[in-house]
Length: 246
Image 1 (cartoon, rainbow, N blue to C red):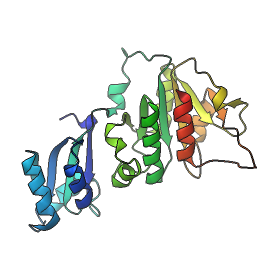
Image 2 (spheres, rainbow, N blue to C red):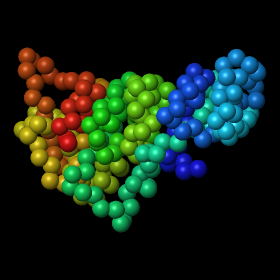
Image 3 (tube, helix red, strand yellow):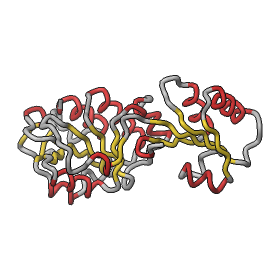
Image 4 (cartoon, rainbow, N blue to C red):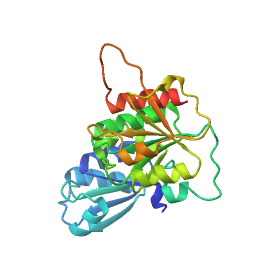
């Protein structure tokens, strides 16, 4: 099983809904040995068996390690195959060449799962080539993000990385323009004409883009606004970036 293309979800209702969704590709069901038979767990087992999905039973402690959220997994976790997922190590290799039309988004410090879900949905709709999703400083890739994405997350081009700063630095070293949104920038997002593969950095709800990334950026862009409006929600900003970037 390619772990870079696997997303583990948890919780009885999310797992049940995933097993009922014919668009998804579950590969393995994990259950705690402390689960009582019948009820929703019984439904989950029945669906998994009908789909010939591998079922593994674990101690409660071991299941917590798999779900990475023992307080909320309710004794159930499910591995899903997500064909467009990738790891940063697989994505950035010496032999890989990026076309000048390549457009990517980096999440930096965004902690609201609903915002991330909506960002993913917009990026998918707009055809963004990659969404870099750090394991640190952003909301966990879990049920709330899935719900916010309206299910588009499973087919999203998500590249899981360790750290936003290092990701931006590495991509810059590989010839990417690093673009940040700045209300004081001279250049409008809508007038920007990329000449290189471009990474658009979306900053957190309160702190914005990390100062280290902002200082290393090669492009600063503003979104023109009227009526004394100073800023937009990051999910709205992402939608504008995603569609105008292409």
